[in-house]
Figure: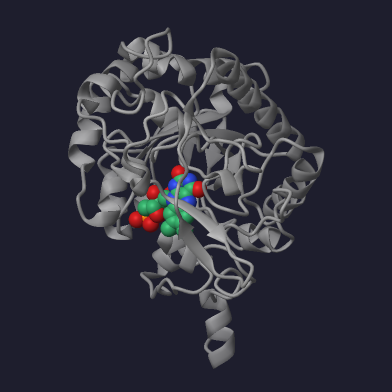
Length: 373
Ligand SMILES: Cc1cc2nc3c(=O)[nH]c(=O)nc-3n(C[C@H](O)[C@H](O)[C@H](O)COP(=O)(O)O)c2cc1C
């Protein structure tokens, strides 16, 4: 496991180890998108990660796939995050903000009765979109997505500006950088996908045109922070939210050389179909490795043992863990000790109280309870 505990440099981010916390929505913000007070304790408890990637943070009021997700467009939201970041830094951690626009994966009920936005208003697959809401009785349930409509060019420009503003607020909140959420069937991924993006203007059609939104977002964020603090998450093969790209080698094969010259802090590849047991890891890596030699984080369904192999062979610089980090606040210490690991509990994954949020014990806590040295 020693390889996982070697430091790594991802752009301006200096990681003391290669164990990254994957972004995980926990849906505990208030009705104004202000992160809750418990989040400071939740993230600070995971400060042993080489890098924490925050839960997805909405860049504006038209982004909302999961009820009670936090935002970063108001002063109040920014102040909320500032407290979380300060607490995480105090524990010696590093944290970047995952900037998210859900696009068509939403519903009027989550958008003050406005219609969700999408590249082209493709609506024949709404039952495949993951939209979740908090009911008055406290239950957090999947709800029906409502039909989206194609964005105007002015609305596209607004979204780009929202990413810039959210990044500026991330700087104000003290985050160490940002990660653009270009994965899992949300807006950036929707634009990249030839099945969801059917536009005939300069944002659709060719791969260059489908990539335009992403490139404009990177340029906008570069106005407020160096590129060496900007990460990008992609999931070329993800079926999630019905965004399957029939030609990922073409789409992402064209993006890879651009990434090689873009000077971003890192590329974060999510093998999203691995959640359902259908890994595309080898194909995914092959697309990028031909042209991209910059810092790389890989994720999804990777065990600590496999992660050690990945960093030892140089396949990637770091490995992000999702569910394992959710259930094990002191994951690096547990990996060093060879386990054991807490298992994920069904309670409180999304929404609710501190149950399932702050009550996963650390090894040190367990040792204290049983009086073990
Ligand atoms: C509760 C939960 C919330 C998630 N929220 C996000 C998110 O906000 N942004 C994102 O890019 N991925 C999100 N994911 C996906 C994870 O980042 C990760 O890709 C996934 O858990 C697979 O990694 P694992 O096998 O290590 O758990 C979420 C996953 C879980 C389990």
